[in-house]
Image (cartoon, rainbow, N blue to C red; front, top):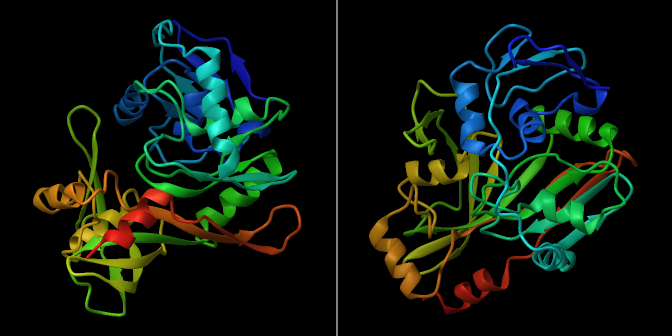
Length: 318
């Protein structure tokens, strides 16, 4: 059981229990600091205001049972943007046909594009809030991993602490096979290529995260396989072998073929042309996950079909 110790001068010292063991520290803080914008949480992590066992901590660090987390005093603004219950119900019901697996251990959903996995930072609802509304009887629902707000596809949610720990370990050891479908700009001439380029994550003013290929960064590798060629774009399958922030998007940019509709790493002129042709979002979709099921111990492959808007765009693409 997670225990809050007597805090000095409004600082909270939280002893981590089994229910939070294995969580990333940023996800843990999101549960502890409800109402605090996500950008603010990352800011207090970057500036060293959050401490783990007395030391500074990176946002991606995972916490263990018995760890002591120092949380600085923060003023949480009262929520004035709570959505009406009908809107929450409608959002939850929107997710119902997108459920791919729902068993005693986990839930896998085909996440829509344009919705964050967590609410906060100006977003009233996220996927996890919608799922909790959809499954009010579930005592435990925690995100196993993340997808960018603008990325659609397979997203895994654990229903048990044991399932979360098992899946976290598989993700940490890169034992989960992830395959994305992406439309990249230009002609990708090779049938298959592995991009091995280290990635360096920088945080710009305002909390926006930007990543670039740099020898000073962390090792990262992605295999791209050509699926279909068009006049001005190429459909590819991308398999990341590491789990770096924005990895596929930056590796595609590094190769000179940024992903269609990518407002952060893409080409403005090409994105305008794609919009005129009907593409209103980032063309990146987590199409397949393969992992060991934490309950049965069997290898499981989950596939999420392309959203209708992406499939329709491909059919019109010259």
